[in-house]
Amino acid sequence: MNLASFVRLLTLAAIWGGAFIFIRISAPVLGPVILIENRVALAAVFLMIAALLLRKPLNVKQHWRHYLILGVFNGAAPFLLFGFAALTLPASTLTILNATSPIWGAIIGAVWYRHPLNGRTILGLGLGVAGVGLIVGFDHLAAQHHGGIAIAAALLAACSYSIATNYAKSAKSVDSFSNAHGSMWAASLVLAPAVPFASVSAVPSLGIVLTVLVLGVVCTGIAFLLYFRLVKDIGGASALTVTFLIPVFGILFGSVFLGEVITRHMIIGSIIVVAGTALVTGFNPATLLQRRVASNA
Image (cartoon, rainbow, N blue to C red; front, side):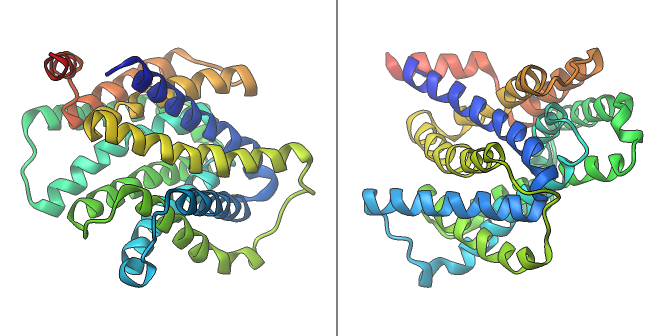
């Protein structure tokens, strides 16, 4: 991995870690439905402009069902669930629970493809469960009103991402950019019927409006472009390491900008979750480095 790719990786992790800060700030004001509808719609418009500049056709008639499935499971559902969870949980906790997505992916993949889990994966799953249990078991928010429901929603959101990932592996071949572009339009159309029934708790301030704008354009649209550039340059397995870095930025940003308390059990639990995720995904820093050196030899 060269310096440029490493910088992109850190930037992407910081952007996606920051996304949970913006969700935590704006969800209590706008509500999950209106917030996420604006997020995916802004991302869709941004990616449409990029598609026009890059001359990448969407081929809606041919792939609309594919975009719809991705739009639901990789956009509308997880974004909405995290938006709901953000009404109760701190942003730092949300980023840690989001890191369980590869763990859910291993479970769903084993059932989907009927492949037995090996010892390494089982150990990783156990660590992931233990890490989440440590985080939410000692978190006083879990005992508050709707705390348990919020935790379940965040875990279900991570699971939804995994469903989309496993579906994409067996789906028709569509380039990654079009997947992102088409799925954001599908997500916005799926959520649109619920908007008239949603309400805001207060008139959005200029700060909230800017927060939503950054969440849609930067944390979704630009983030997708960064991610797909990483996949192209260093491969999907290497790009997946962003999952391990997001909680670091989420916890840091939550502490600095929202005054969230970083507790010992949160740090230990997040380390355990990341270790479990690394085992499940088969990530090995030493092996990755050897491959990179060999490829540059």
